[in-house]
Length: 140
Image (cartoon, rainbow, N blue to C red; front, side, top):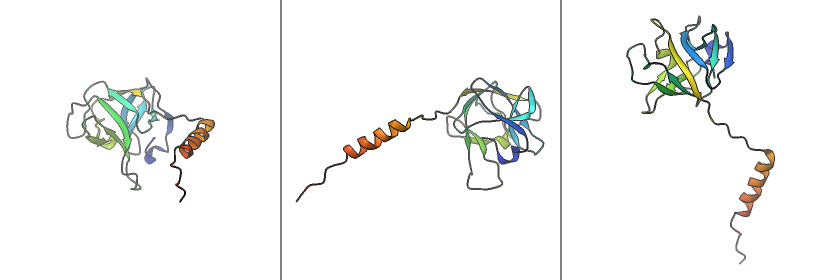
């Protein structure tokens, strides 16, 4: 979702098709913002896939990446930025490493993570099927 340091800002969840701007908020945290309201943080769920209009630029390099999956890292560490992007080759960049000083980098939400929806009745049926598939103990 949104990094802890963006909790002081208005925020909204991302949705498929959203156009997002990468920006640095007043707290110094880099995040995604609503282009119609750059003070509104847009929070992504881990697993959300996004595409950039141009190859992504970090503070130290220009990359060839245009598609990424939003993830969170270092969740066991408090008071550190967790929001990151993972690329197809396994490379990971924290959002803090993205540049936002010269021109805005734009991204579009391609796909939200799949959330399984299992009805309570389905869960009960699965439990029954699991019990039925257990081997019957042999009687000596």
